[in-house]
Image 1 (cartoon, rainbow, N blue to C red):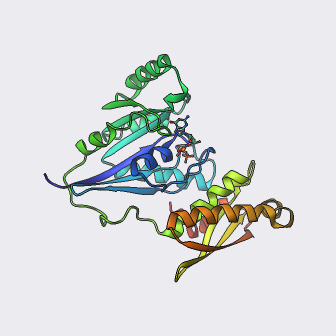
Image 2: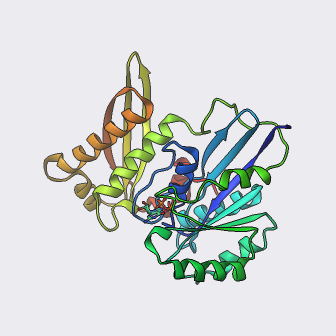
Image 3: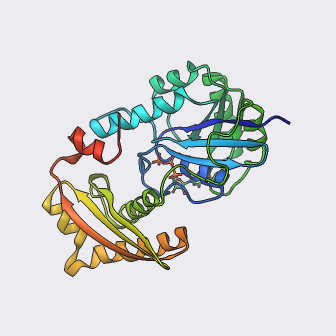
Length: 292
Ligand SMILES: Nc1nc2c(ncn2[C@@H]2O[C@H](COP(=O)(O)OP(=O)(O)OP(=O)(O)O)[C@@H](O)[C@H]2O)c(=O)[nH]1
């Protein structure tokens, strides 16, 4: 059999379960998963390798209407991933409302083979599943529709064979040993950001960015320093907490997860820095890796 390789884009609104799905398929915790919307800002690649194929998954930021610069650059990540995909997996939450016709149009008009995944069916009745299946059939006329639960890994078995069927014959794009094209430091920053999302309320998670300023592997120990960027002094105070208690909790939780991920002891130092209005400033966004 000839070798197959290609790109699969996982697309959908925020919080529908894209990261959960990709992680279930890739089998490693590559994307961060939290119960809050829009936690995925970057285009993350997960790669599934075997002797005969290589599937490159991109997990795009949830589809949204751009409100400020940061969201603009998220939308261009979505467009980019539509442009180079061999197959689109459109993920929708079974309970989601479908008011974004512009986005659906973009997908329907892309001429790329389309599979609709109706997710979170563990939270719905059979009648609703049937109703939504008919709705998406009519709306997008996809090649296939699967009713799934990414979280409980239900009805995902058919997905891999279907993807392979639509992958072109092509040599591998990435080294077969690699699981992802991102460096460990990227995952370290994503894990820290996940802990911020889990530990703080309201606007704090959306006003922060994490930058790894140093990542040094020594014998048996990795030393990591990270800056947490916020927009205002008041946010800095909340992040740090009374006597540093809040930041300490984030640091401890992040350290444990990073240690599990890289399978090595780490020493983690966190600093909080205020950059007023960083989300609206293009040059900062660029230095954080959001290139538009
Ligand atoms: N009940 C149920 N919950 C699910 C399922 N799949 C995902 N979730 C939950 O939905 C929430 C969002 O999941 P994510 O995978 O982060 O969603 P996402 O689409 O990647 O979100 P963004 O990164 O914000 O675009 C998490 O709390 C998941 O545990 C499912 O099949 N059933």
